[in-house]
Image 1 (cartoon, rainbow, N blue to C red):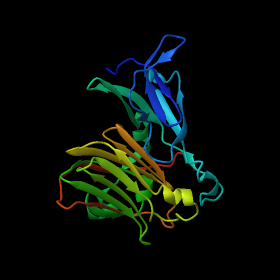
Image 2 (image 1 turned 90 degrees about the vertical axis):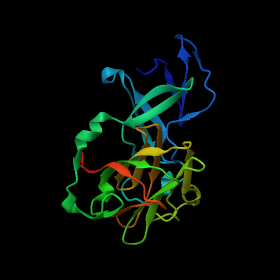
Image 3 (image 1 turned 180 degrees about the horizontal axis):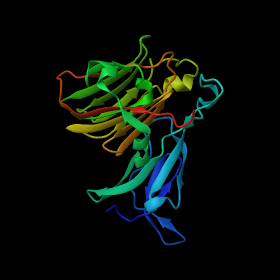
Image 4 (image 1 turned 90 degrees about the horizontal axis):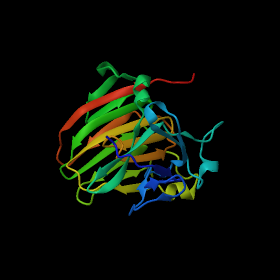
Length: 256
């Protein structure tokens, strides 16, 4: 069972402690980030959810460039709903933020005849930017995932086992020069420690990438503004490692 401690959600971080009805106190030694990407702000959680779950939804944008993003008729979106929980490891509490179970009902497995190339290492799929990709990867030294289109625009996900740094790079993802602040934050990192394996879940939408590692232990959300939809997916490694439990699912529209 998850430990029964209250959580306080601030704009970007979680505080875990005790609440006596009047005062909240915590002995937490470090910040627990809700999301390590630049595009998850002012999240809200919901009371009285079924089974007392704590459901979180954030604003998928950033005030540094929210008013100048290269979109028409709309400005940004909300993150997918996530279930927050805490777990204890080595006498410390940590945050887990995973997609709600209901997300599965919006998806359908993609038939193999709709994909061309070498699954899972290098393939093309016409509706890649409306899909969820998940797999478990052995990490020998490093891992790089490149999501790209026919224009040569690409969004890069990487992990370096040597220093424990997981990163994303949107510097060549499409339209990036609309804001100095957007370009300044093109390369983003989070220290996840040395891992022999990773469980990776990537959700792609029209202008966003949401990444969940190890069932929500680490999360990163990025906005992207490609000029043409991404269709190509490639896993690069110096030593081709074992990829298990690969799955790609099409995400159905909820609003027509």
